[in-house]
Amino acid sequence: MLIGEYLHTLDSKKRLSLPAKFRKEVGKKVVITRGLDSCLFMYPQKSWDKIAEKLATLPVGQADTRGISRFILSGAVETEVDGAGRILMPDFLKDFADLKSRVVLAGVSDRIEIWNEKTWEEYKRRIEKGADQMAEKLGDLGIL
Image 1 (cartoon, rainbow, N blue to C red):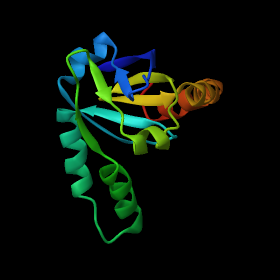
Image 2: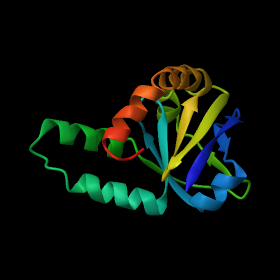
Image 3: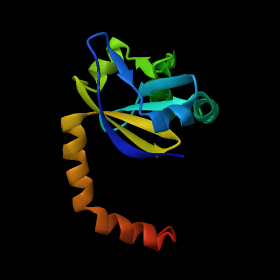
Image 4: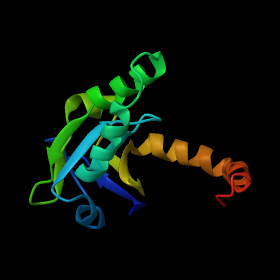
C-alpha cells in the first residue's frame, strides 16, 4: 500500500526521484496521468490496468463518462523508473499540475499523487479544517 507524504525536487531535466519506500511498491513501470484537484496521479502498472479496464466499461453515450475517460486516458503516459529511482515528467503533465522545483509525493493507497508544494499545502489546510465533518459522513456510512 502506498502511504506517506514526501517532499522532493524536480530537477532541471524534468526528472523526479521517487522515495525509496515508493520504489519498492511501484516497480519499474508506472503510468502518470492528470489527476483531480490540480495534481497528477501515478499508478503502478498493475493498478493502472485495473483503472483503465474500469474506464473502458463506462457508457460512451453519457457526456460525463466520455469526459472523465478522455481526461484520464488521453493524459496518461507510461514511463520507466530508471536505475536511480527517477521518472521523467512530460511537459504537458508538469504544466497541468503547475509543478515547480519542489513537489510533494503523497501515497494514497493504490496511487501516488504528485503536487505542486504550495497547492498541496493549501489543499491540506482546507481538508484538515473539514476533517471532522468528513469523518461524520464516513461514520454514517459505517467506514469510520
